[in-house]
Image: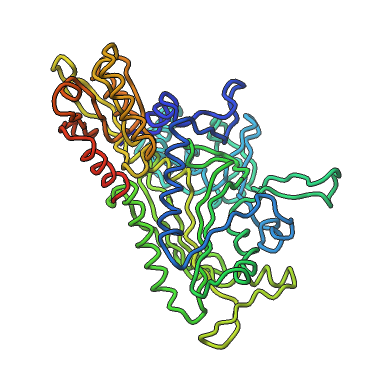
Length: 502
């Protein structure tokens, strides 16, 4: 599996992702999606919407505003409690999330000789052991170095704060105690700049769905059980954004709030949603064996939640959450009903009773899905070059469903008008249905390599046999590099099956 630096380098080199405001030195926690990145991202969103909204009779869509009445966030608990534990380094002035710092006493033959600290990472245990050995050598301590048992900084005792070194400087006692840091971005609405004009950029898309629940009930014919889906931007003032687009300050979510009766078998539905979501990941090219499940223990659930399971993925920085699927009870609707004074109850015609529905929430980040798709697709192999010699090849094995370009059309040579025009004609014909690339520059092998590296599944070459003999073209498969000849009608039929599944 490629490391994060390799993925990030490819994204920059081939126009998938850029650092935001890069000409001004960048802006930490913000990213721009380039020409290829925006196509991949849009294809992911389109696939999700097609499957979970258009593909189901029980889910409708919504696009709520990014800035909502601040009382929405007071009712949901975000104003009072949407925070992460923050720690400052007094020496470097850097800021960290307290729960991402791990520390341990270094013991030699039962004696504590000092403390080490590391930032949370897949390799933090080995890094901690290296630092412990380094400290032992520096202090010239004799004896056996005991195993390093890392603990989270949130579990540190007050008397240990002065002993734990900062991950930034290595100096003991330079970290502050943890304190709450609200993650919402604050702004002002209107001409005034006082408390009456304070508003917030939404930190999640879910509350817009809950706030519009009554509107959807009153203006559509939906019946319980049903869901409301939304794709949209969210903003969190992350203390330490890191791991490329995995954790950023501006991101996009794909969320569903699936409303059910309090009498419904929520455990069965929860399991069904987990299975359906995992199948969807496979449908966009993420292998099933790279996906896992992390069931939250009851003692770590939010007070209103009945269950929560994360679908996990092996990212370059370790096994991490890709999607959360929570059973939230009727907490959110209750909060908004109480705060707004509006009756949000649903009248169930089958049961002949009113109630506030409970909800199952599959919540997925577009950017994390993008990174997972990139990671799963990255591959390296060797194929013969134009001279028959083995040559290293980098390719992205995107599913045709989400690939930025579905196919590339090449005239074998560009200085033969009959080849060039025939290739342009086919390109225009295919472009009416799919996003297709045209390339007439360079040796055909180099053109194949360029398309392999950006994940284009199919290469279509127009050669002399096309114009002088039977009209067939050469179709090349990106993954196997195998080539077959077929006529245009057969080509379009084949591409329709591979790209659209029809």
